Amino acid sequence: MTSEPTLEPRETTYREALVEIEQILADLERDAVDVDQLAEKVERAADLIELCRSRIADARVRVEEIVADLETDD
Image (tube, rainbow, N blue to C red; front, side, top):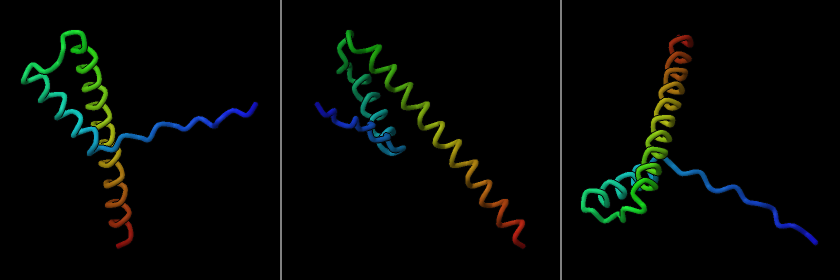
């Protein structure tokens, strides 16, 4: 019996995370979230916010490295 290779889930992009956060917030603002799903939605939003913060921090470090390299080339 051959097992199928497991595919890793595609990584969420920064833009996709923002769109999903906005959708969750819109649902919460118009009371569209069932109380049974409320904690799950808030937890998902918190995870997405952390992902966005991490991406911003990574980008900041990378930009600083690029700028530092440019300054040493002069």
